[in-house]
Image 1 (cartoon, chains in turn blue, green):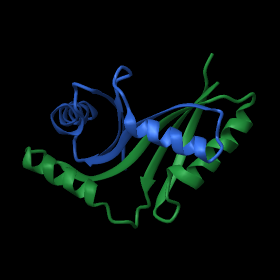
Image 2 (cartoon, each protein chain N blue to C red):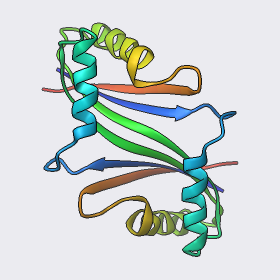
Image 3 (tube, helix red, strand yellow):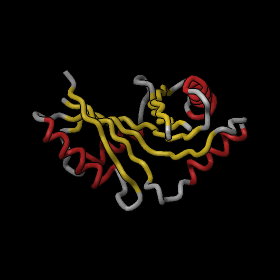
Image 4 (cartoon, rainbow over the protein chains, first blue to last red):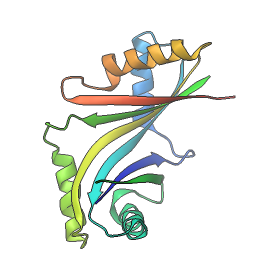
Length: 83
Length: 83
């Protein structure tokens, strides 16, 4: 069993209205030292696999097919083995 | 200048319909080896601060006040100094 921690972020050239809204909220609360906010997604996926390479290949495929939008998003993930 | 990478996750006892939906989608695509999916949020916040401890304190406060809902969510963050 493996646990994949998947991070999905908007590409840096893509506008991020959700991040801008959070930035505005932080400014309203008085956090003027904040320079920028970018929102992303974080997923924890548990997957049954015999080998790390198999789990890696499956997770990468899932990210391409369903979890991220490769046109506007990047992803990376860490894989740890669960005992 | 510091970059905070903030991870916000639902507490393990809290139901996660979004994660369940993604899990269902993955099963429909044929990924039967997936055991569970939990959705969370990921934020990258750039903040001006002279010292690491000051930046840490501010980010932690922001997470409590605005970015996370402490009733149902946990958060943690990594802080890196930008040159």
